[in-house]
Length: 200
Length: 200
Image (cartoon, rainbow over all chains, first blue to last red; front, side, top):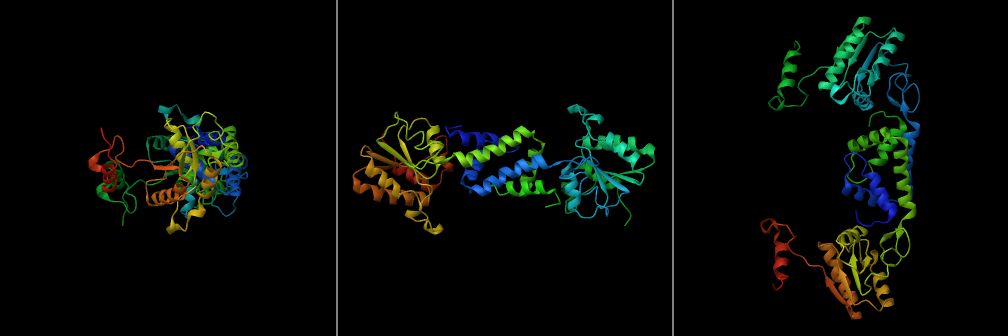
């Protein structure tokens, strides 16, 4: 790092701690922030502080929220008989973007991954069981964890935990992505697409 | 943008105003900031504010500084007979990184570009002339504007302005970059490298 004035080198150091932002990019961003007008720069700084102070996790579903229970949990128009289990608040956002699912969510904040030392008690899974004991309306749990080894392991584990209560447990479908190309689809996905075929 | 809680969507909107940061990257950064501990996030926000409030431009050379005159202008060990003219404070940093140049600087904050409506009076050029009239020690001006059309035009214009005062005006050399490959060098650069050849 060259001899920048201290406030500048401090800003560059802070920005380069962000994921995917290296030293060069941090410099470019820092110079841009300095060239912004005061209001815009202060508004960005305040947005960072506000996001940290005003956001928390919903005590019911674990989703990121600015009130408790979150907007989805407290929305009377949502279908309370279905709960979709996802790994992160970003997955909730992805499913909400689709604008088709009207049920509730449960955010695990991770997936079981013995390789990384993350067991069933390190994710938000027990609270789902407790929640299901309290809410008698739930008839189906849709497990929408990621389609990778950790996500599959978590789905299996969750299903085994929930099944004794008699609630139906389903898993989102794996198959060829819409708009994809069979020729470029990996064997495992193609195999799942064949196994999961439906009558036309 | 999906229905994120307001403080989160506000942070994403602020971050996506940065250059090279699109919507998806801004989301990733925002979620990272939320997952940071409070101290780190507040420290980043404060660094943005500090950079905006504590940094200004040196009234002598126009470089970015946290005091006036800047560290370079007020350093008695610098050679006051040479002034290097550059386009931006980042160029100053690049030349300082080399640790060979010991003279002063003059930052233009841009280059003449009629296409973008930027004329000689829109950059920090007149102040260089005023400065040269005040400082009798200067014997050489090294014009280190960028090697593109705007930078060349600015160099020519500056040279014509300064020459009447009898001060020597030089331009940094254009040629094949060290470690480069002749085969991949563009014609214009190669032509400049031939014209600017030196005796061995």
